[in-house]
Length: 113
Image (cartoon, rainbow, N blue to C red):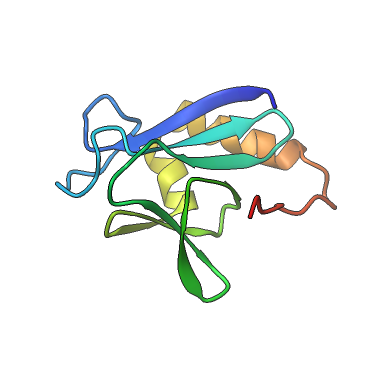
């Protein structure tokens, strides 16, 4: 899998998306923008977990493909993937949407688990 860019999420100012909550790790998670148009969410060893709302319930994940409409949770902080992309800055937001648009119209987000 070729990674075009990575969006980092965490408490530290150096992250693309900063969540200033003590339960969020300094570098909590990352979203990889893949060349094939998919977005991959990865937990970076956080203690409080990275979660995605799937099938009507929150599921803790270490790595999962995500779609723009997905709801994410880092520790106790809920955010939509779309909001996360928007907070990452103009360049990475545009890159993510360009990758998604270039993916086949028939391609659906495949879950890892």
